[in-house]
Image 1 (spheres, one colour):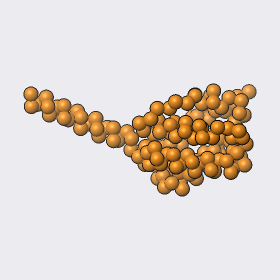
Image 2 (cartoon, one colour; image 1 turned 90 degrees about the vertical axis):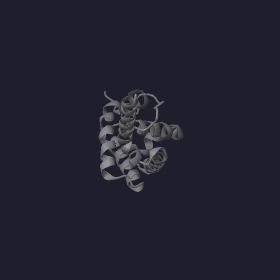
Image 3 (cartoon, one colour; image 1 turned 60 degrees about the vertical axis):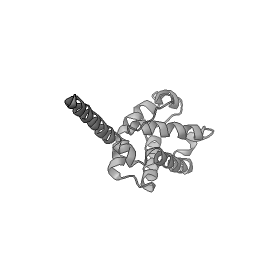
Image 4 (cartoon, helix red, strand yellow; image 1 turned 90 degrees about the horizontal axis):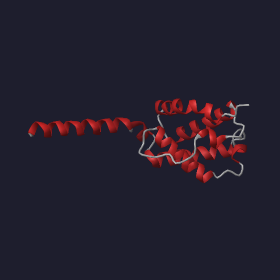
Length: 140
């Protein structure tokens, strides 16, 4: 019985360590509170950036920000669930090209810098976001 208890404790300890390792990136972004600040700052940048602002004319920015926080949280292995639509459907017909996508990424990087996200953590997130270009671009 004692050995089984030790084994159970070991499994719990390993699971706990694994959970902490999995959410380490999420924590580097300041968890949900930090992600909310980053997304708010990113949208300040996006809406004042002439390369990206036109894409957000009449857009429900408050809802978009909420869904982006959820999405980033999931990408960073945080304890969130993304409740938005898929990227292809969300961006259909918006004529998003590589230049606009890259401009948005620059605006995100600026927001991450402002909020003290370590460079290596930024790169990990950007590596997860880069493939999304295929989903948001308009193909003729």
